[in-house]
Length: 72
View 1 (cartoon, rainbow, N blue to C red):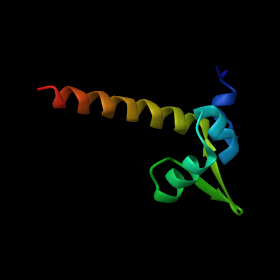
View 2 (view 1 turned 60 degrees about the vertical axis):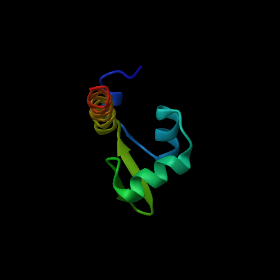
View 3 (view 1 turned 120 degrees about the vertical axis):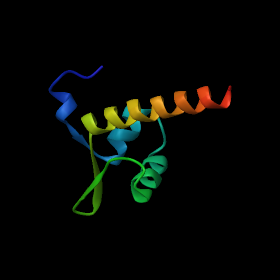
View 4 (view 1 turned 90 degrees about the horizontal axis):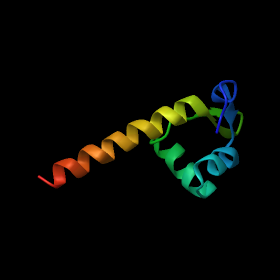
């Protein structure tokens, strides 16, 4: 979906919500709690798409490992 140049892109809450197909309030909650890689710029949150992709892959691995342990 994203080309190499866009992986370096920095997006806002609205942009990330669209990218992850979720509500912006979910992004705000994750950013405020520190559960998602983010930084503040001025008064708003910003996200590096490359960091978000890495966070998603890591989260998917953690879920897979939890399910494997639960089935034992």
